[in-house]
Image (cartoon, rainbow, N blue to C red; front, side):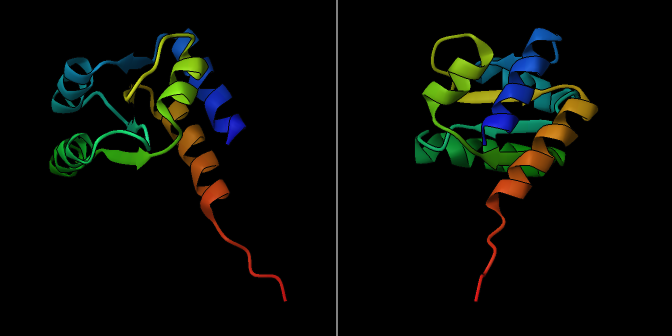
Length: 107
């Protein structure tokens, strides 16, 4: 998971990340968000709000990492919601998230 966080930090330094509740929602509504990350320790109400909004606008949403981990990756305080506005960065991060959630069965 640390590779996805470092890629998120790289996207932040490139200016391709927005954070904050209203800013992320606005970015989703405008069609500029390619990936939305919600902290796994966010409230159920917050998760539902973003799940519904992202489904309506066709944006990929993932619940990953803690508030602290997201904030640390971005060089900021704790963050609950993050939107990636660049398709390339979003695909890189999404690729890392899917690789790390796949389960291998070993006999």
